Image (tube, rainbow, N blue to C red; front, side):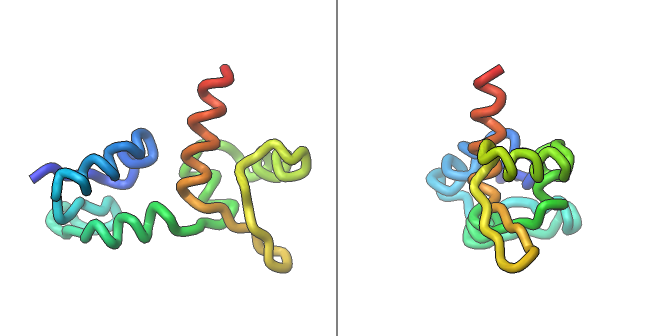
Length: 104
């Protein structure tokens, strides 16, 4: 069985779709033990879920100040804001990071 962890997904999101389309029924979550398997539905829930600013910074390697600056400029990834809470969708972060790499 091929194992895919969440950090690999961040580096190459195409692995998510190719793994699911190949009919694999699980992947390994890095937060769990090596033997704990997570279903493709959980993978998709994770991929299409949202994160706060601190988690977005951790996932991408950018600082929270960088995200604040990009929100102010309107040049960052799409976000939603409720009160003082800012949320980013993981898939949008991946697209933004990949497009930022292409610009360099």
